[in-house]
Length: 251
Image (cartoon, rainbow, N blue to C red; front, top):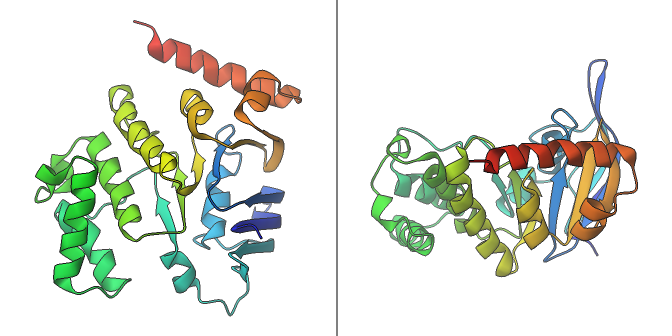
């Protein structure tokens, strides 16, 4: 049984149909990278999985539980799914360690001492122990995103959903976040990542999914999708992002 299964998922905002019947699944331990042009529905798909956005129709299952059932305990589902946003979503008025410890206390019900001990251990594991008592705005963008990832990891999730975790970063800060994600992937975490980082996808993805205009147009291994795409839409998209990558690397 797949850990996540999405069946004929559709999402409409008025006359705009953002998702037009998405079917895909994620097995436990898999790393899935989702790519596609801006506005293609990638973020909407991730948010539907945890019902931060309500689907118009279709079904979503997580570990055999129907997430789209109106009577489901969605809070319990979200306890088991780590979500990392592109804009960090840290509380600016709380210190770094508080940003990690607070969800552990509120959602997991941990005692204060246990929550802060775990938060400090997580920060030490990602090399930011010395920033524990700083405020988020005193950190670089890369450090803030690493804290956001650490906050999700601290909850001990079954799967992590990451929505373009490097898109808000300056190019020189992207590497430190991707390095952390590669380390998490090597440890066996199930991950669904929306990103345009081709090198990263080649290194860690079991499957790459290309979404365009609300439908999946290509799916396969990184080698199949990047080097032997079947659809012209995929080839056009890859040409665009590869040009951007070459331009970013130019001196």
